[in-house]
Length: 311
Image (tube, rainbow, N blue to C red; front, side):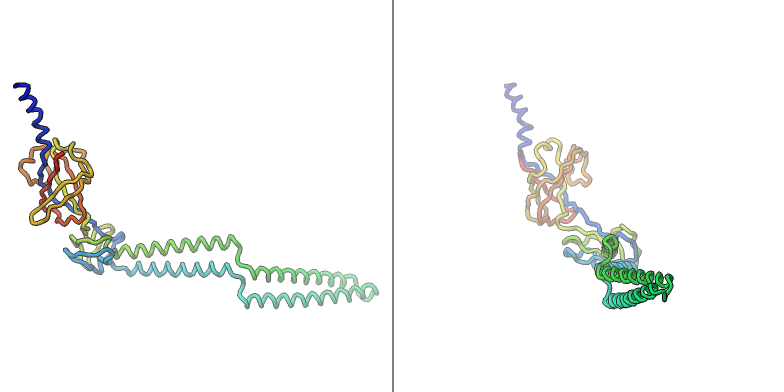
């Protein structure tokens, strides 16, 4: 009999653990606080406490006069750099080519005259009617005019081409830099008038138009529906019976019962949860557990009944 009684006593903890565990918890929200990356005066607020906004909806806007001017300047700089790059890929303009061609024609005419002059001076020098110095001057003039024609021919060929490759590469790099500067200016401008990142409830508006908003300070606090979770505290004896991914049941006053998945189990124990809904759990060693469910229509702080299935 003593052995049988001892055996039954050993089974009692097991039987107790096998029962579903009913706990009390609450809903908790993970808020998304939206603020500008730069500081300035709040020019406009498009939402108020309690509003529901769609993803992409405007929330607020700071004064953007300076940032718009910087954006416009960056765009003008980019357009100028792109125009210069396009110009480097081209040859000279038609009027410039015409001018070089006319200079070349003049040089060729001067060359023909130099050739005729040299022949005449050569004949005169042979018959002792001209000095050797005049003949040398005619030869020098011929060489000078030939060089001038060669120079203008090379200049004309070069005028048909674009700029040098290294010059084009340098200008191309400048265009890339100007594009980045424009992107930065547009990003700074957009950051002063942010949009809602998702469908959400406007939980709190912290500033009013005309007030100065420091950089990084939230102006609006949002609560997307998917950011509501269940929080409850699991007694230590049941810790091994629950793991991340397990399903738990939940219910509350005037709401339909539902099922949520465990998403987090604390690694460290607590002696009392931050919000006490059950006197019996006050002196027990408990572990914080979080659970999530799609479309969890609960308000942060709302009490929730939690059912941990038997294992």
